[in-house]
Picture 1 (cartoon, rainbow, N blue to C red):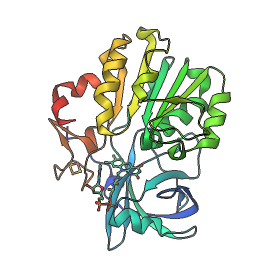
Picture 2 (picture 1 turned 90 degrees about the vertical axis):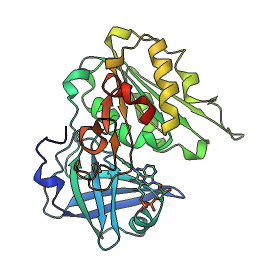
Picture 3 (picture 1 turned 135 degrees about the vertical axis):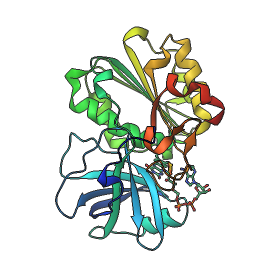
Picture 4 (picture 1 turned 45 degrees about the vertical axis):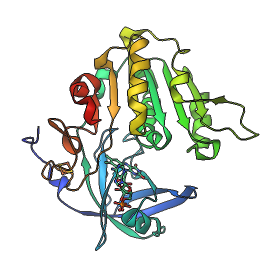
Length: 278
Ligand SMILES: Cc1cc2nc3c(=O)[nH]c(=O)nc-3n(C[C@H](O)[C@H](O)[C@H](O)COP(=O)(O)OP(=O)(O)OC[C@H]3O[C@@H](n4cnc5c(N)ncnc54)[C@H](O)[C@@H]3O)c2cc1C
Ligand code: FES
């Protein structure tokens, strides 16, 4: 586990320019970045970076863009505390420090040719967008795609314009549910698990990729298992408090694993025995 070779890029802080930024909601901001030396970030969907504000601190943030689109990478950051508030104050043209990519590169060959179900709760759509856009950019290499999104309210749905494009893509089904509707909402109301029973799956050729708030996992996994999807076909992107990001400090431990290095993306069968820790 933490005996793995740690890449140089995991320790080295590299400056990146903010080339575009916009608010997606009152407290969630999008950042498009490019390294000042013009190189690309060499990552796989599911990985994250440590974003550093000099003299303030460093935070782990998922990479939201797909590596198939070159020349930039994208982050979406919710204002939570000191570091993320300072990052929010940055504008186009400002510079920021990046370490990474961090986390394991999951072998995408495992899911090639398979039907995929993406299950995102709230901000969980941020890392899943990297997988979704990767799959859509390589559409012929994958089977049927179902995207299930659950949000508290319709205002909290991120990437509304992109969702329209996803819905128009051949063999892609998008379904969204909200906990609390407004008068304009015409979609589902209820928890994300309410969307799972009605989807049609061929369990042996289906993989599910799940990311959302901690409370969601237990119920979503149960619903997926009830659909016949195997434990080693359920992929979970987990979040833990992190400090070093390189398997040294132990802050992100889940049983025998360090979430920062062995994850944050895990297959369910790998970590199900540490379920109490999830
Ligand atoms: C692998 C990974 C990927 C992440 N990706 C994203 C992302 O794409 N976009 C995004 O907005 N956030 C993401 N986060 C969460 C983000 O790292 C935290 O919100 C951030 O570290 C808070 O730092 P702060 O100094 O602003 O706030 P702090 O003052 O450190 O904390 C503010 C509040 O947030 C809580 N908090 C801090 N870190 C976490 C955490 N990891 N999980 C749950 N609660 C936390 C604290 O307990 C506190 O209540 C990710 C976290 C991990 C581990
Ligand atoms: S953050 Fe994972 S061991 Fe330090």
